[in-house]
Amino acid sequence: MLPSFLITLREGLEAFLLVGIALSYLAKLNARHYNKYIYLGAFIGLLLSLAVAVVFQVVVDQFSNELYRNYLMAGILIFATIVLTYMAIWMQRQAKNQVAQMQKELTDMVSTGNLWGLILLSTLAVLREGFETILFFSALMYSSMGEFSTQDALIGAIAGLVCALLLVWVMLKGTRNVPLRSFFRWTSLFIIIIAAGLLSSAINMLQAAHILPILHAQLFDISHILDDRGVFGTFLRALFGYNSSPGLLQLAVWGGYMSTFTFFWHRGYKQA
Image (cartoon, rainbow, N blue to C red; front, side):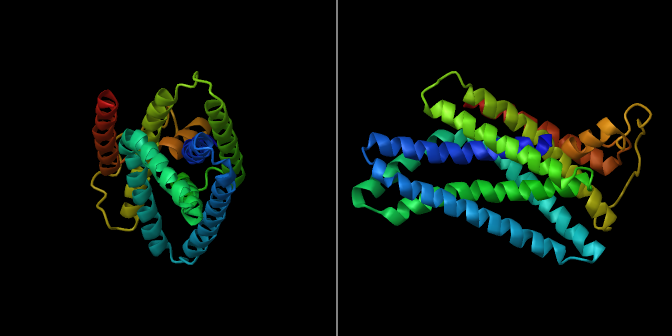
């Protein structure tokens, strides 16, 4: 539940914030009558996101062969890791530029009466976050190996979206007590940890498909302290890729990723 909550909170906040900023900027331009086109675009983006989710699931279900399914799942996990890493580290450094660019585009669209441009702007804002959410959900479900139910994931996702909508509403009402920069900073670190777990799971699947060597099957075993099949261990396994008896390659990749991108995360926010 927590992984899905975090993902939709993060993605929902970005999507709602962009749409909310567009609506607020239209109000400053005395162009509230264009609001309906922003709402229409957001609705279209949501529908397209749902359509992509259905198509994505249908495509995955076609892979009945276990070997090819491992290939596909590993590919999804690696791609999700790349996108998560980009979002966590580099995307936030461009946030101010992104908002300024959107405001400039809105000014041009309002002055020229470009209604299709307004619709497309909000459609793409929602669709981009929707696609990322679908990708992350799929990666989390594959990495958890069925240890979390779809019901738990949906509950967490809905709760995350509701919280994101409330946060955006509070911010746009003029309250300045929401520490948005700190929120993005620490959720970015949390997402890097999740991405490390996804990458570790991808390595495990590639080893199962005999694409990567196993090297040393088990470096140590701390299952007597915290078993990854226990209640809390299962939670850590699905969320962070925890393994109580990791292999050499899995642990090396996880450690290398964490040390590298935690450094970039820390350095990026010092420079921001």
